[in-house]
Amino acid sequence: MCAVVLCAAGCGEGGSGEDDTDRGRGEASPATTSPAPPIPAAPVPRGKGGKVPDDVNGDGHPDLAYLTSSEGAGSDGAGRNSVVIVYGSAEGLDPATRTVLKPEDPAVPAESDTPLPSYPVLADLDADGYADLKFGEHVVWSGPTGPDPKTPDTTLPAATGTPGDFDGDGRLDLPAVEDTVDKPRLRIRYGPFDRSGEPARTGGGRPGPVTGLYAKDPYTLHTGDADGDRTADLVTAVDPGATDGGQAPAALLHAGDGPAGFATRARQLGTGSAVASGDFDGDEKGDVVIGDDGSRNYEADGEAPGVGGTFTVFPGDGGPSRPYELDLAGDLVTGDLDGDGRDELLVDDLSGGHPKPAKVTVVRGLLGSPSDVRTSALDRFGPARVPGVGRDLRKPERYAHIAAVRDLDRDGSAEVVLHWTMPEQGPTHIWVVGGDGKDVVTFDDGRFSGAN
Image 1 (cartoon, rainbow, N blue to C red):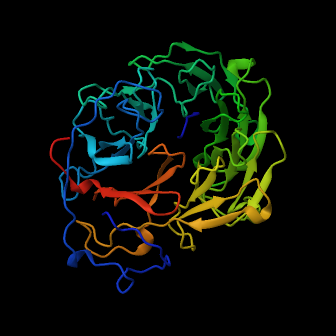
Image 2 (image 1 turned 90 degrees about the vertical axis):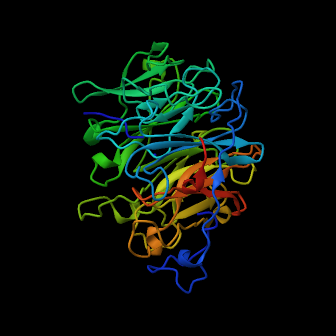
């Protein structure tokens, strides 16, 4: 079948990444430090609706939402889903203004055989001025004070990708992939959506652009503006989980007048297992990067060894592709961290066994001259001791990973949101890191107190 597969304050430090605990390495033992003070809840600002894409309560400031498997350290909610929304302000995220949806609330998607993503896509699917929370196929609807716990979530009727405006009407649409007897077809579900998940209209279907060996495998769908025309384009890639860790082909479909609202012919991209898009050269056209997510099985009959740890950028202007061999593998995320109009690439190594110390690497200067390309580590670490774990955690178990890359204070430069948690033990630790590598705000949800 064809399916869509979509991704304590003060704990930050640089590090060697060695496989040990942090005794003698300058990190205070949690047993000898005072507990961090609780973070009392403040009222959620009531918004009036707006156009900021990731503004859940419509007050003009971007917000952050995430799924946690615990209601806080030491609670009895471990292993169950809670949804946390931390609201923004003129200075960025304010952990005091928040909503916590509990597992028993109708708004929280039920647990199922398919794990929910930890971080939803924030997008105003019903065009009411408030960004909704899209957890894969589940939507949590929002309003002037964020989601109403009593409003049930909605399960979308088709497997869908990330939202984008494919017809240029200012309303978000959803690309979908349908499996018709193992012959996948792409279709756009045009917004706005009602709260049953039904679109305003549905476009015609077109065959998937991948042919040959992987033609019947599950797709991932990635939305971006690859040609700078203010309408969304679509990158389709074969789900790496269907290829036993192998590298599979990807294709770019521009919006157009052909089948299903796309150009008639797809642009075939390279092979890989990680996909992202960003404007690396500042020409206001989205460049697509295809890379290695670190899941390769390295079997003797697999790809050439040179595929591992490499990525290739396909410029939005249609120019020749640019390969980069930087020995980096992981999830790919983009954002303009310094406000110069050119995006950086962030590589988040989720393998758990990579020998290099940096689990998050920032790559700058892509699509410039070779001497422009430079890398830097962006490391933060969770605590060595966690309630319910009867030992100190080793450093490789404590690397923080990327939750989001967004301009949370709207100053023209994106911040990197890093997170760490011990699944089913809680709490979730969050670092918001500025483009200069310094922490803007840090918190953990085990410190939340009071009404939410």
